[in-house]
Image (cartoon, rainbow, N blue to C red; front, top):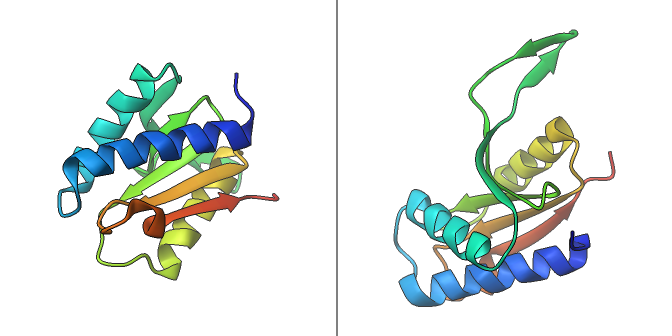
Length: 126
């Protein structure tokens, strides 16, 4: 298992490769599928569309939330294809980190001319 920093670097590298090949302007689901393929091909363990239940007053509720990609059972990857990342996108990822108990997340907006302009690394301090 890789450490968090190395894992996020490898994820970002794979995402850049996907973005370089496809470019911006496609659906989120396309980038998610291609990134999943690229990450697994690179040897990382990846789960997609991971169910994220909500616990409210001690009751587990399945509200339909899903983590786009969970890499090495430690990094939550939220894939976007939007005009611009806005604060609610960061808040969404932070909430997913809190609900899942994971510490590291990557928010990736593939609808950028340069992918690095659409990548945010988020840490959850619990």
